[in-house]
Length: 100
Figure (spheres, rainbow, N blue to C red):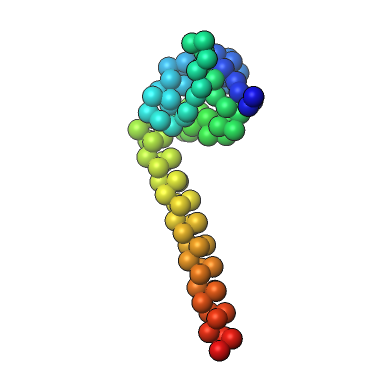
């Protein structure tokens, strides 16, 4: 079984409002597992949760802002990967022409 932490534990540990956690889930920023009416966050998703919590409480970014920032960061990550892929293809093509 994967490691996970309940919503209630997160609320206590991070001293956040339970509605904030639920809003993150409702808008799709976090995915949870539900068992016996208890919502659980997987440990692998804790960094994202902590990032959203810090942005919201420390930087006072509202939920729509979190969604926009998260979307832009994901697009940047995707573009960086596409760039690496293209550079690898270009390098392979360049290597072939050097051999001729």
